Structure formats: C-alpha cells, structure tokens
Image 1 (cartoon, rainbow, N blue to C red):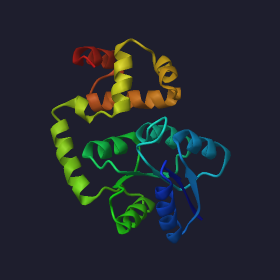
Image 2 (image 1 turned 60 degrees about the horizontal axis):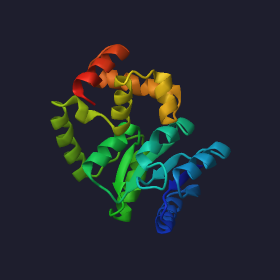
Image 3 (image 1 turned 60 degrees about the vertical axis):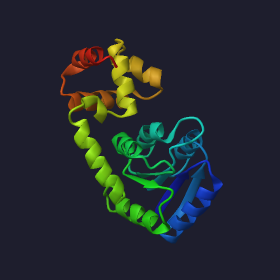
Image 4 (image 1 turned 45 degrees about the vertical axis):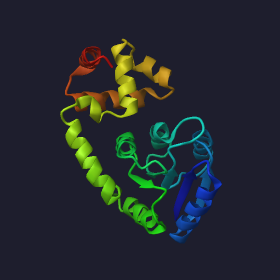
Length: 207
C-alpha cells in the first residue's frame, strides 16, 4: 500500500495535494504544518513512500529538511512542491537529495506526472526547469563553488575555520554521518583530497 506525507503550512495545499494523492491510491496521506511536526510524526509512526515538501516553512526551511527526512525515511521519494520555481531552488533541491521539483502553479496533471515519475524511480523536473538547469550546470562547470548546495557551502566554510567534522555536526544539529557524507561530496565536486585539501580550498576561495 502506498502512503504519503504532505509537509506544508497552507491548509489549502494539504486539501488539494491530499485529494490528488488519494485519487492515485495513496492511503493514508499524513499532514504536517512544519518540519519539526513532520519529523516527530515519522519518528513515532509508519514511514511514507512519498513525501511532498514545501520550501517555505516555519522554522527550518524545506531544503534544510531534505537531509533529516532522508535519514529518518531513506526509502521515501521526496517531491519539492513550491511557489518559488526559480531554477536555483530546483538545482539545490536535487543536490540536497530530493527526487523532484514541481511548481505550485503547475496544473493537477503535472502533479500526477511528477508523482508517477518518482514512483518509477526517476527524477522529475518540468521541461522548462530541465533546460534551465542544464544551462546553469554548464555555467557552473567553470566555477566549482557554483555547483555547491547551501549546506555544502556552509560545511566548507566551517572546515575553513578549522572545525572537525564532529564539531560541524554539533554546530549544524545533524549527525556525524551526514557531515561526513557532505565532506565526501565536497571532495568529489571540488577535486581535492582530504580535510586539509578542503580547508586549503575554503581559505583560498574566501568562503
């Protein structure tokens, strides 16, 4: 049985998204008004197969919630559903670990297509977003920092200040494993070896 969790602070979004998901066979469809409420539900109840997540939430923003949600519900597909459809947000959502990004201005048919695409184990972007993202990535190839997510930039900056991975995890309120994974991603994206290499890059780039 497919189940879902909609995380959004607008009741009308819950109403519309929940109705569409139930029509597509999702039952139950849970609702949370904030990231904190969502994480509490996931910690005490069954894990959903799909999470529909808004970016603008009270407290922790949607993009910052992707990693904690992924830790608690690693098998769930995450669809970002936001009023802000700028390409930069879509890119950062995918970098954070989401499987899809959909504008709230999209018609219901696109919502269904996005959910079906995630069910098939594929990533979803609208055609417009896909073209814009390809252009953005081509420009970022000449600027390694342009390919980093907000969290990766944050971790890189803290490494540049000389903090250990455990200290960074404590600073950001995430697990050591999450910080270690971010460090590994940074080394791969920036083409450097070890923490010392990351520290040198951070200092030289002024991040």
